Length: 346
Image 1: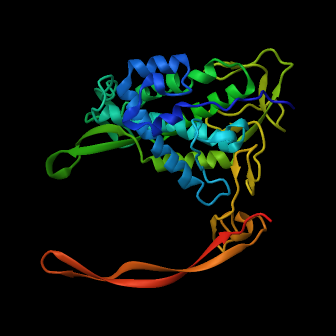
Image 2: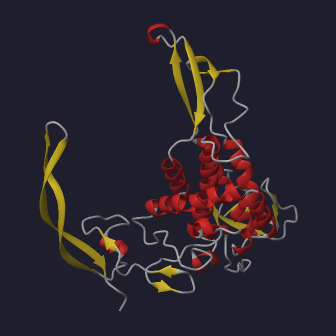
Image 3: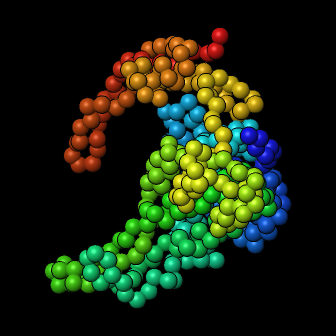
């Protein structure tokens, strides 16, 4: 099947490398709607730009033992020609970046960093959980506002298209936003005589972004590959746009992906060698685990090419002792450690 060719273009992701130099008219790759929002909400754009490094770091943490390790490039697309393919990895990038926007904006709202939002105004009065009745108080993270903003800004490019790739990106963007909402937690403070907790004040709080990353990584492993039946003119409605054709899980008659699933169109390359056509940097020089049989093991990571071993000397603090009143004295210890790195392609 022939998929729609995707041109690698600059993305809002590049905002993270601009820092204080972020000027809306100078950000490459923004579509008109994104540029309009950038001018209207400059402080929110600063928050989104600062948050790019956070979701990239989370992506790199999740893929640290994989052949593809969420490596970025120096061009404006941030991930280069990798984005030409509708692969599992691209699905993860879209979901984690969309989640990153929600997390960054919601946190900035509740911390009073933005004039356009604050704590969630809907969390007032009383409510109930498994422990009984409680009063809303404190400052609940305004995730609803952050989700709406992310949907308007992040989805703007894909909303202009009506093809399979646009559907894939929109679906994964939404899955990322849902992942953040999934891990909202209720935090409570007890009031009452002798800590009896007869009265409680509670608020909703964002969980650590690692939980979102772990959840999306599980989604990556069980991602649904889609096929597009171009003869069905009814289309598949995502709630955020309509892609031509009927999207269904490959090998599953009439099955549709669930809202929280990650979806992809094409199989991934093996990422073993550098390939400018697929955006693969290969695994030459990657560190591996000689004793592991998993994906981080040298046999798998190095794709059968073998590995080199180097013994390096490491220095660290050891035998630390506390001395009254206010100091800790340590010794400098040295140890030898073997490091294994994949050989190059011959």
